[in-house]
Length: 64
Image 1 (cartoon, rainbow, N blue to C red):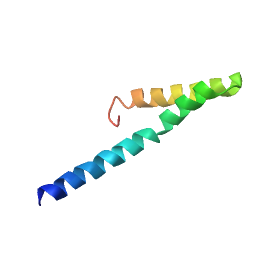
Image 2 (image 1 turned 90 degrees about the vertical axis):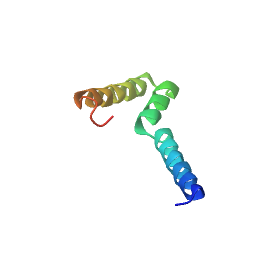
Image 3 (image 1 turned 135 degrees about the vertical axis):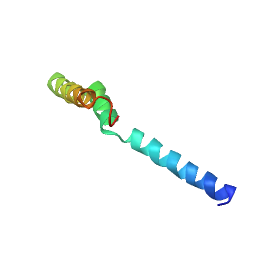
Image 4 (image 1 turned 120 degrees about the vertical axis):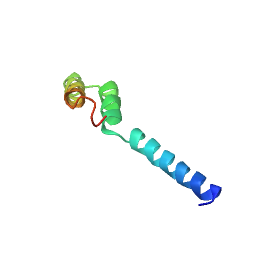
């Protein structure tokens, strides 16, 4: 493999990781909970986010 191929692969992987973080569920929930005007919906988004965090904690850091 040439250096150009290796650098291209690294850039593609970095781009994919960046996109996955940007479009992640947690990111969208956090943004919705901050921008929501309805307090009931805001609380619902925060509860969903809290449940996701509990799920990550229950896995013991295995997946995340």
